[in-house]
Length: 65
Image (cartoon, rainbow, N blue to C red; front, top):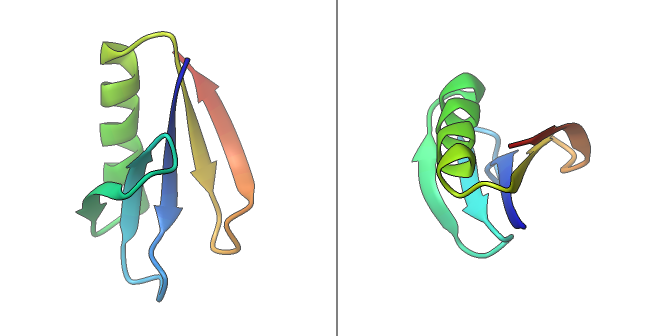
């Protein structure tokens, strides 16, 4: 199962989408754009999970595809 993470960057000025907790794939200005892209990628590579993290990098929400 593939795992994707959406998390704020270090100084919380943007959002990152990571694949399998490796280097970020892309940088987004807002949370919604990052979540949308992560879901799109996860659907293409089903079965997958998307973990959305808060500013403390704790799991806020988990979605399965």
